[in-house]
Length: 499
Image (cartoon, one colour):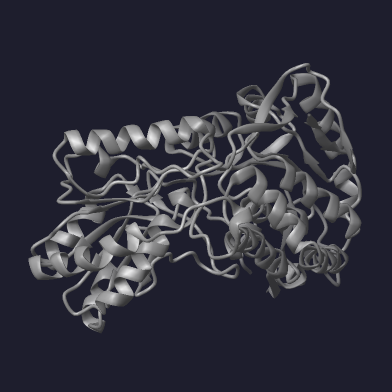
């Protein structure tokens, strides 16, 4: 049985707490490894070591820090297949999707190569007689990230790449469900030239999370996960005086107008709704066709596509559409929500609950489910299912369709499919959601913009990656300097004013 420990001071180390968690192969249902769960003492040592290493890194000029990121990008490309295979083995997603997971993180590392420019401050010459003013963006010190199972490469890199580029040390607490890739990423950072101690990977459970939230050395925390935990992390972190950016759940709607290309819309829904078995915070889980004829046409096109989805382990080839859910508990929960949707009166057009694959009967597989005639009072509409389930909520008018995402408690992403520019512009302007797609089903911004949801999908006033990432991991210091040609005799007791 493989034993997975932590990554401390530039190397893998065994856990010493005596507590472990099972790491499953989701395709077979078998335990393939055990991951150590850190004690308070282990976390304290990792943080202390990071704090000791950070000042020298902060004093390293931004261009040299950027060169580490440049080399890291090269190493990610070199080891892409190796990383993807390890990711798929523990998460269950297909190899092409796993590579996409790595690449989306790699793109943030590429953006961070621009740290010398992004960290430039402002300067005012001659603010007063002999007075200049300038601002500096300086690192916070030791910061931390708590990241989820569904993107074990991308989201850690969204956190630690900008943090390190800014001159901080970083404590990463990844998901214990798929812990191998975060440690592999840390090894590549060391190979790229990052000094030991600046990126610590500490595996653990809630006790490790609480240790991060309560530690006085840690100045900021980034989190991605469910909304209840995001609220918990945000409130506890800020109560301890930390900065926090915490991203929670989602219920992403896609509105289909009568003038939309129905084939394009159906293909977009299938990919965005069922990719990665629906275990994405940006998955489209609600389709809102406007008008009966639009809804009927959409269902007619969707049903055979959902029935034809190819489901299997990542080893079955690149043409597999999606793999298993991450755990048996996740599978049980998703099936239970489908059961509830049926009881509430929704029409289950395609039922994937009975899916079974020969040779993988103990895997956490489930076929795609498609509901029609879902209403906003149903639990399957209100709850983030996080599985391969798409709900169709019919709307008679554009305004009725618009009100659904407007009034939902989540505000992560949304999309509209239409050929009409006026409708698209109105939708983008009025919707109260952080990321909007126009004829784009999963509107995840590229690395040089920022990612973040609104309402109960996001807590904190700065988003992930892009310019906000550099703002979050630095603080501004403003210096007023005076080099007068002659000093005035005596003290001045009035508050300084412009002269």
